[in-house]
Image 1: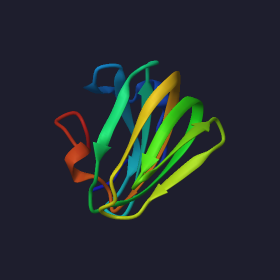
Image 2 (image 1 turned 90 degrees about the vertical axis):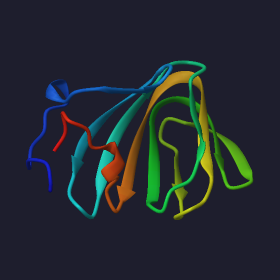
Image 3 (image 1 turned 30 degrees about the vertical axis):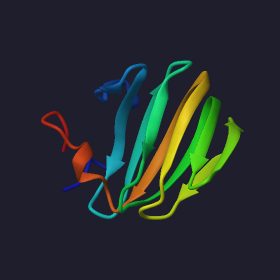
Image 4 (image 1 turned 45 degrees about the vertical axis):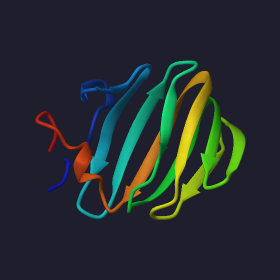
Length: 115
């Protein structure tokens, strides 16, 4: 299972995942997945963990990010990395976008409109 080689962001559907949070699946195969996540100010990516490795790039905005027991404020150009099964979450301080990359891909993100 995988996406096409070329994808246009304007044509990709959004999935609303929490109040003030929506995401687009930007491309994936079984080994890797990129997801663009839009946050409104004050919205939250609740603390959770999963067996996937993940790295997130702050495209825009400001976020208080917690990985394990440490919290830092991150802005555009920053990134953070989560090893498998480590607790992590983010609170959006200024509206922005995170680009998440997972390995392996997040099968739980695939819905009827995807892949």
